[in-house]
Length: 350
Image 1 (cartoon, one colour):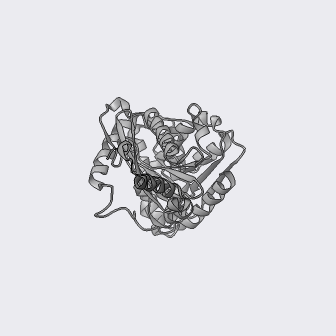
Image 2 (cartoon, rainbow, N blue to C red):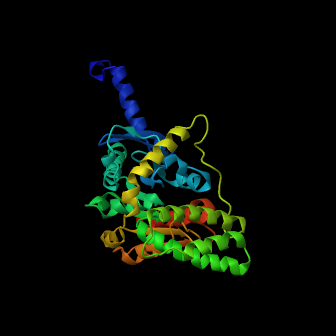
Image 3 (tube, rainbow, N blue to C red):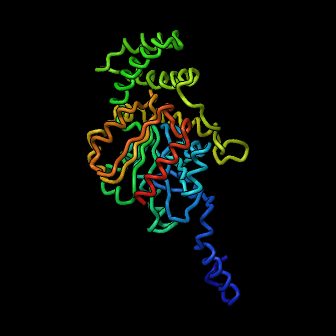
């Protein structure tokens, strides 16, 4: 229907009523919305849930490369955050249910960083320039979020940066992970816990030259990181995780098979760049308020990266919080604490 041809007073009243209703604060207290971002050949969905009454939006930067946004809409932490804020679950370029026609050369950290900027501009265009945005990057999302924060004048678009177990320096990550494998394996062996597994880990780690970690060894470090987290969970050092994603199932907007296949290709294409990506020396550019959240037993992305970030960013408003009973995903192992520190951070910096 062409609205320019509507003449009747009744229709005009109807349009005016729709506009008023859509602007009503009550209408955005329980958002369930999807927007699509098109940039440089990529079409990327962003699912928005939660309470936007206070104009506060948390943009979740998912892990991977190869994950998807809605994987992070699970369990208690997401439900609690959505009660207070609007949470944006975005599928990055070449991941999740994103689509498009572009070359391998368009799958770079730089392109994904620009995609994030475009997402933020679309959110502001739809919900208003006055919305207050916070980035929450986990794992690989820490690399992407850090890249965004150190690029140009991007920081002006956000109120704060939250990094949870973020991989913003892969060479540093690998070195610190090997050190951690060695230390914790000795600790666990002295306690008599899972001795066969920890002996295997210790022997493997002792034979790695931390001055020359290969790409294959980087993959082993990642795999062993998740393996030993399960071992620590079995031995009672970590809290049991929360429920799986609420978005899985017959009516989920995520096709797990498509997402998985797409993610594998994207991970392979980005692998060379990501394995050598080190942003530590550019962290000084970050001046916005920052919150770093780290699991004590995270072998995938060791807590030393959080320490480095705390020491090197220029922001005077910064904090690091450790989760004593968590591995790589503290939002899963300790959701109550995870939510409380984020709420405190946002309320102080909104």
